Image (tube, rainbow, N blue to C red; front, side, top):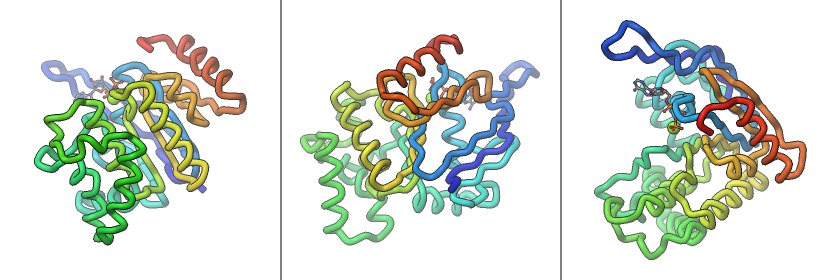
Length: 251
Ligand SMILES: Nc1ncnc2c1ncn2[C@@H]1O[C@H](COP(=O)(O)OP(=O)(O)OP(=O)(O)O)[C@@H](O)[C@H]1O
Ligand SMILES: [Mg+2]
């Protein structure tokens, strides 16, 4: 079953002070099946964040259609999109959008509280994730008084707490030390294997991408290459490195 279908996506930004415009995404087509574990790679500025924001309905394409779980995002208004996100998606954004007036614990449990889940269930699930990402010692701190990596781990917990069937993650391991990154990726692999969660994550890190079963390379606003893991992980990593070398750019 197809979980995500993007057709002829165009995203144009007009350049300040000039009449020129920039097609960040330039007629892109993509489909993701249920249970796929996909990385999006591409040099800085290649449109990874733009694309994930379009998929989550946080941004609109200039042209084109996005369907997620059979729902066409362009048919939803802002409020409906917010409900759609809360019910369907786990989002880890690059800007680490934790609420500064809430403690890390309050940030993490907020999505479940909003869904009206019983306190006991909320606490159990939160504790499982907090343990996994090893941030119990800063749970009562506020986002501004902890490190970037601790904020990112809290943002990961918050995205996973509702057991979403689709996770969109923008460089989720970008601020993590290698041990935490490995633990986090192994957890994603587990929920992908066991619960058929569909994962789409942007990363610059080829080692992180090699945990996935598919890697899509973006260049010049379109898909430059789309490869599947049909070999062991170490060989897949070499395939990813080969693609990056052929593609060029700053990766
Ligand atoms: N609001 C905006 N207005 C104008 N241009 C924008 C805007 N947002 C993004 N861009 C441009 O779109 C391009 C793609 O940006 P995007 O953030 O999607 O790249 P990225 O692949 O996520 O990069 P990185 O790896 O650095 O996170 C960049 O050239 C950026 O300057
Ligand atoms: Mg980005």
